[in-house]
Length: 316
Image 1 (cartoon, rainbow, N blue to C red):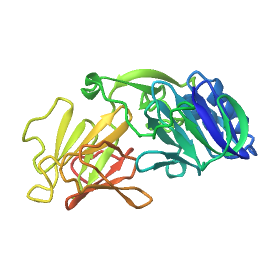
Image 2 (cartoon, helix red, strand yellow):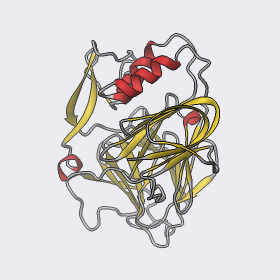
Image 3 (cartoon, helix red, strand yellow):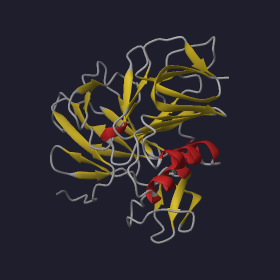
Image 4 (cartoon, rainbow, N blue to C red):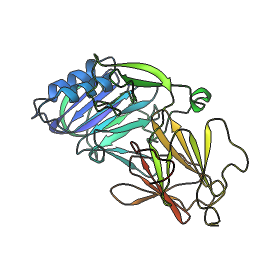
């Protein structure tokens, strides 16, 4: 069983049934609704999305996590979750329009504002200002952010679980409160979870002005289809004649509702620039999940990923 260590404070930490909910403050009318949705719902993340969509009062920043076949959850509002790796990474709930997602290995550990302390619990509720959640009392391995491996069927356009809006028939991630297609709030009455073909995940804006939809796994480079393509791949020629760019420099993979960038050039030299600035190096062959607005720099070129970009393959 997982064990949480915490520091006392004015927030609320609840651990139950391999689920964790942390509220930065309980001085909000919405706190009880969030607790019920997170801990009692069969589909807790969707229940949280519905609760937020129907909430008229202000919502406290919160973190929700569930440990099942993988560790997943959401970070909402001006609050951060630290993911412990060889180089710790941070999931920041304030940089997304709704909330930021967490996806990790099942034996991962996470923390918020926690340094050290003697207090711990395996189940129950406590007043807390910080916590760290371990897989077990004995095992405390570092957290590594990973993505679910794409199956052959999904990579070729097979089934993806989606929240389908009845008003426009548009597919959405399961944890969506407002439809990406028509903007309607999604409730149990106007949406349903269905298996759909792998959807287009926005587009990339290339530095030469073109826009390429993410309607397949994209191979990007000077001559990306030289050695042939898999059925689920599409070539995007960028930087032809530019020796700073490899024939196959980058691959963008669709993994359910995530876009994963993998640098195929060694040494890499590629970086990802986030919306808030700062650059993260892309290591050769190591998957990196892109967020909306991330700019990938490679060679002398770049492209920007946009989740809801208008698609115009003739350029802008």
